[in-house]
Length: 114
Image (tube, rainbow, N blue to C red; front, side):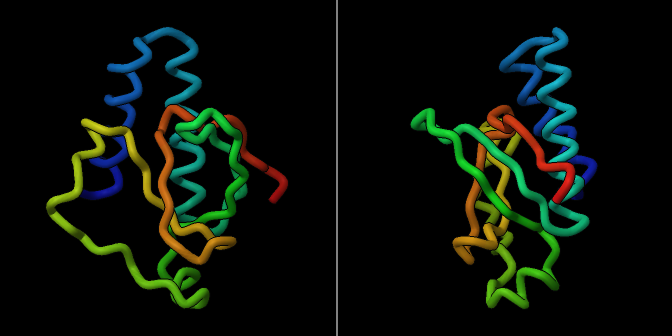
């Protein structure tokens, strides 16, 4: 699945969960902002974990940066769930030096100054 298809799948998941009001639209836009920034470099953002706690994350999806941190590309395992069904977004966490994920509707804030 390419980036455009992935973003469409995730935004479809958000809309199916939240509806089509302004809150859902803002959530989709926050997701697009974080996801695009993850592909451009390092982004600092906050999201709600499934236990309800707020998590600060420094992450990326740029393979050169991931390799410099000793990480390896995430496997393209066809057994992974479709993001259209789960809303789960994977990223490489630069503080943990490991792959992590968050729900697309859980993004709370983006550090635009970082």
